[in-house]
Length: 168
Image (tube, rainbow, N blue to C red; front, side, top):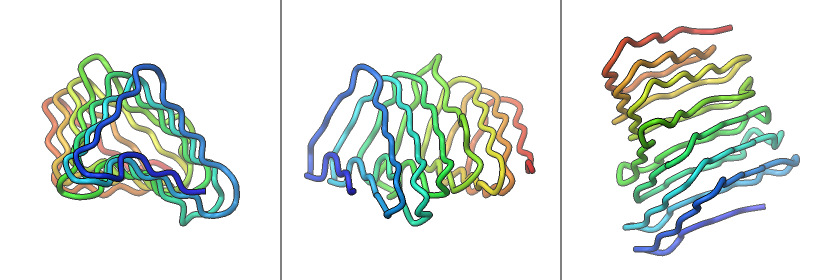
């Protein structure tokens, strides 16, 4: 299955409640949001569950354009695929004050946070063989506690104390 949202240029959409994305199965199943130039999205809470066992599966939350997250973001990846925020240099995301991005069950795959901005303290804990990529252009105004078995930092700004630890 393939899911595309906002493929055209200068389009926008908004989800005021909780957006839940469940990606399961065994065949590669890709999801892509905000492909067109000048696109925008506003979300309430977001819950992503990537359980598809095909490790080539990719969820792209913002290929181009801007995304605003007004609720908490919860990520689960037990299938081993890629979850990528803001794929291209023209994409960016903002997590509003009082909200967090967190990993529930994330023992496999890869989480990429590029051009992602957050105000409050953030904690992301990945386990197993998972990899966390932060940057370029990521900015966290508060404290961060990021732990993962594999971690790649590439241009991240933190406004408070930071803890970056490899975790087994």
